[in-house]
Amino acid sequence: MSNPICPGPTSVVWEITLNDPWFDFVQSGEKVYEGRRYTEKVRQYKVGDSLQISHYTDRERPSFRTKITEIKVYRTFQEALEQLRQKV
Image (cartoon, rainbow, N blue to C red):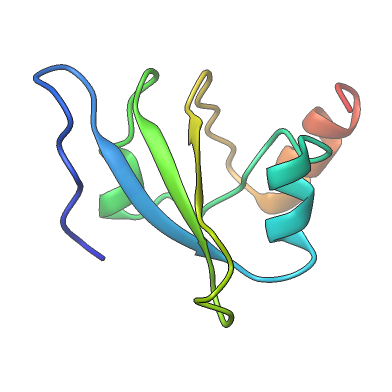
């Protein structure tokens, strides 16, 4: 999954996978932030790009797409939890 799908000249659709319960939480809108290690791939994500999200183990479940509206970078996972908990 290292190659993005390119739907147009200015936005990219990145493919990611999630397992339960996170897949259902993101799909329903209950979970509005998705945390990822700041890898080389993730550094390429831009506001306006989309994530095509597939279930990690159940490939029969329909995937869905969501738009990246904000990107936040934290030094530690704990810092992210403390900052985002205030917004949830």
